[in-house]
Image 1 (spheres, helix red, strand yellow):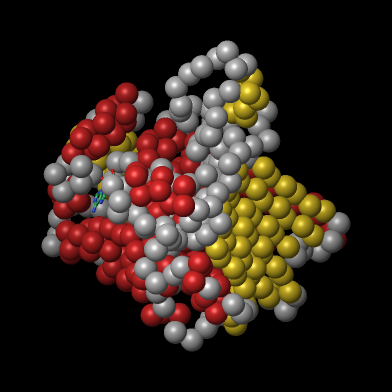
Image 2 (spheres, rainbow, N blue to C red):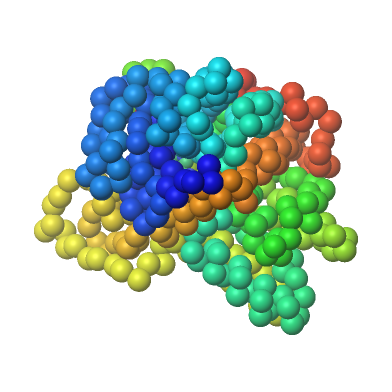
Amino acid sequence: MADKNRIGIGFIGGGFISRFHLRGMIAVRDMDVIGVFDKQSEIAESTVALARSLSLGPAKSYSSISAMVADPNIDALWICAPNFARIEVMEEIAAAVGSGKGSLIGVACEKPLGRNVKEARRMLALVKQAELLDGYLENQLFAPAIVRGRDIIWKRGAAVTGRPFLARAAEEHSGPHMPWFWEGELQGGGVLNDMMCHSVEVARFLLTEPGAPRDSLTAVSVNAFTDCLKWQRPEYAKQLSDMSSGKIDYLKRPAEDFARALVEYRDSDGQRLVVETSTSWCYVGAGLRLSMELLGPEYSMSVNSLDTDLKVFFSRAVVGRQGEDLVEKQNAEVGLMPVVGNEEAGYGYEWEDRHMVQSFLAGKRPDENFDDGLAVTELLMAAYMSAEQGQTIAFPPKGLDDFIPAVARGAWNPKER
Ligand SMILES: NC(=O)c1ccc[n+]([C@@H]2O[C@H](COP(=O)([O-])OP(=O)(O)OC[C@H]3O[C@@H](n4cnc5c(N)ncnc54)[C@H](O)[C@@H]3O)[C@@H](O)[C@H]2O)c1
């Protein structure tokens, strides 16, 4: 590996998030996109075409994950298949590496690492077994506003007046783009699993002193609440049913579209710290809204992704097609609309992918890795336990490793509460 000065990347899954990574990789050096494998070959071909059109490398589609692993030009894989395919994907990678094929250095896996603790642990075990470097793709930790804000707050405010004690993170939009996200069993839960994975991790990151290890904070309790506020209303449940040819039935088997959680931490001096998170699939505003805050004794910082510098206005005379060309999960095309100038940069994908590429090239484990993915999953499962039991859960609770949320078993329905 010492003679390498660039790495070749293969994508597993060529859907929504892979396209985000590809657009972000325009700004990343020392890498080429070599391949895409997707279970749907036409999606693989269109993602290959995108990579080529962005001049990211000599991309082509592959017939299997094993074929990508076997290609010596592919050094790292980005796992961007749906949550329900995590284990089969990682098992195939580990088996191909184990059979002596190729020269893979590392894998980077999208959030969540697993649908539950058992799956996340299995992912970690498989990557270790294959002796690969592992990156956990949590883009929000690499968002420039978060990286810069955290650095400034800690250098100025915390250094003079003491560490921050409260971090808030929220992520909201009007609902996922593909049917599988809405199904508890396939996705692992509802919005808590889908989006609170970002919020608990970015808030924990803000509260952690730069350079200090993850275990400088200890989670001591989790208190959470979930509900299905919008998508169980008959007219909206019907929309989901229609979009999935009747497969998704939110009247009988909903997933939560709102979740909040409070995680209590202690730092290494025993000081009490709080993370407060809130996520929803029932926010109808301009589009995706990420908000984060970090508060300490004499300072605060705040981020709101819809407070954009660019805004456009279209009168009612401007009639156009629906799209996501202004902002992710856009809800309107007229009136005053915020535009995120570079979403791939703003949400953190550029710096995230750069970190993964540079870590793999240097033969170093990325700063955000499968240990972090597992820790996030443990917090989320404790949050589901708390919401189901209606009480605060001391962390880590008994039975966490085998816990499957009721929503992932098709056994959750707040109407029956
Ligand atoms: N970081 C973020 O903010 C963010 C945003 C969206 C999605 N994600 C994550 O990325 C992953 C993919 O989500 P998406 O939105 O791109 O979904 P998607 O449905 O748009 O795309 C997934 C693609 O994977 C393919 N696929 C299915 N099973 C496969 C398998 N076994 N092997 C290879 N390909 C397979 C599908 O054909 C599809 O094209 C999910 O785990 C999701 O949680 C992260």
